[in-house]
Image (cartoon, rainbow, N blue to C red; front, top):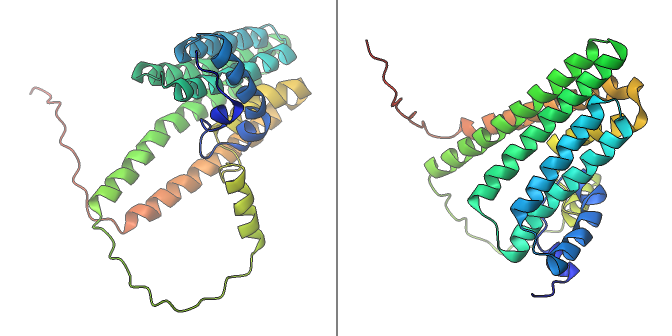
Length: 264
């Protein structure tokens, strides 16, 4: 068995990732990945299944009102979920089925944890707002995961339909460097640390609802989930607006014919 180094594991990290993952998960996940890679034969799919089981355990803790235990298990479940991709890239053992399993497992974990959290808090308080919280979290998460691949598909379609841009001649004229601005310095910081520019994506949304809120306590669950949900929705609106602007100058794209025929 090949002995991997921490640098090998670091090379498997995503080029850009959420700030929650970069700063609060990867420092631990990378070292655990190194341990698993060098001392076990665990497969990426095995880690995905373990992540799902831990996620279901988190949902059960939430359902029984054990907020701290549920938050801890959700964090560990997400960390293991980050490890399966690293192992797959490190050992080149990833499969197409593994991609599907990882995708579906994430959705099951979120829906179950949202349901468990809503049930546990409603049973303890009788407050209907916790039921609305669970439903809202599940709907927002499913919308995000349905919307993201469709936006990617639209962008790829537009790129394929556009003619190649002409290459401009360079005059060789000297241009003085632009003075660094706060925005540029912040952008360089994000690039240096592999952090995406989104303030809150799905990962931060999950962390706020299933880790931060439960750790602080019942009183802040609804406010934190509401603020995180609004920020996530705002982020999705910005992404949709940017996609719309990206498609404005694109040539018309014929819509695919509907192959399903309804008999008359």
